[in-house]
Length: 98
Image 1 (cartoon, rainbow, N blue to C red):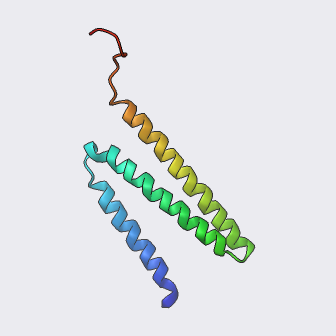
Image 2: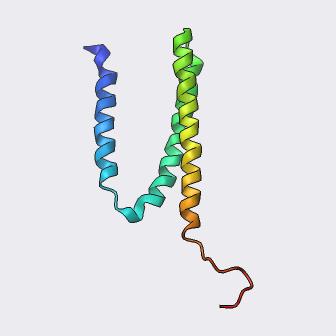
């Protein structure tokens, strides 16, 4: 039974995450993206710690993939957030008269 505890935690977090994200209003998506980018950075740190503790080649491979995917997710999140914030900037050029 003890070996299933991480699986239960994963399943519970997946359901809770889905429920929380599905109820977010559209107007809050940009601030939520910024917060999730921070969380992805923490995930990358956790993946690096797990990779550092890996002993077997399969653990090292899984840890490397986790770091790679986490870093890609964090970078992609910042790119998307930057593009979303560009939509809110004024299209007027500085010095131009309106």
